[in-house]
Length: 120
Image 1 (cartoon, rainbow, N blue to C red):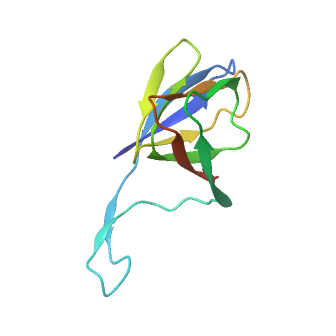
Image 2 (image 1 turned 180 degrees about the horizontal axis):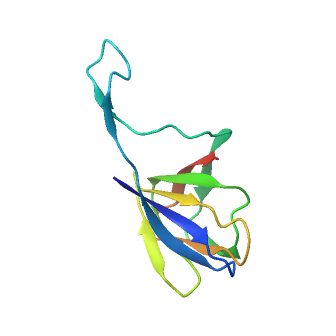
């Protein structure tokens, strides 16, 4: 599987990148059947974010490295150079652009957005 990331280059411009996540069949929760598991990464805290209809975050860097998982609604993120991607329920993005101009986040559609934020 692939995970979308927002990273910064040497000139502190944000851009999208994709990283392959390797999965391995493991006995993760015996006696349940084996399942596909990735490597686990450290995380410090988690919380829920709720963005109202019409919310526009303008340009900002992420306050901390974080994994954002969309739970409901749809949002769009734009990076330097104007490339945009939309994320809906079940989709995730890792934000690593803690410096520079950052990115723009805005709610699209007629529903508020709820996201899980896991600080890394």
